[in-house]
Length: 266
Image 1 (cartoon, rainbow, N blue to C red):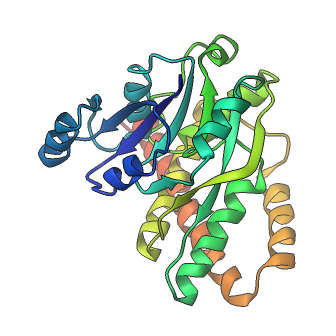
Image 2: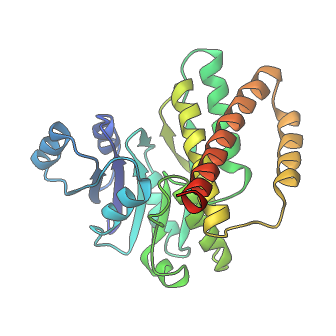
């Protein structure tokens, strides 16, 4: 099958579970941060890989895409795995669409907090109808419409939201498909807050430095968002989402202050 799978990985041996879940004969490319054991195993499996420094998802993803030899490819992460049929479905849909946003199921452990984190992540994943990786199917000819680059390497985080903005601005349709899914492994609470913090920093760069502003003001956007949350979430779930949002805002404003001090007080 003429489609490539690009898997991002940083010191995560679940990478090999991701590879095992690939149910088609496809080109597999890994983009990893330095790890001798993972490198050795990939070499043994004859899977090509790029090595990038830790801490920048845009750099890591771009490095993997450079290895792609097919016109169609799927972006994947090592903490996820494919359902049977997902890859073939994306392959077919990419015949008529340049961007396919695949469905993500956020798995959870057998406790209330883990289940709530899963619900919060799913809400934010689908709320804005953006194109998010992992599970994102793309065609190479998209590049000519969005600025001739995939991910902006000034953005260590929230890089898929930045890409989605350019796709939407170019008038390209994003097909959201739920026929098949990928699964994301359960996210520990501490890691969840850390991710929200990084997304906040990434969004500050998008909004303030790259001028990727949307029509709604921040206050209007959040009011609308919480109206939706109140309809769907119980008190405990709302509290967890509030802690997520506080971590996001902390990351946003910390990036703001760092930028301000660097620009005016250096």
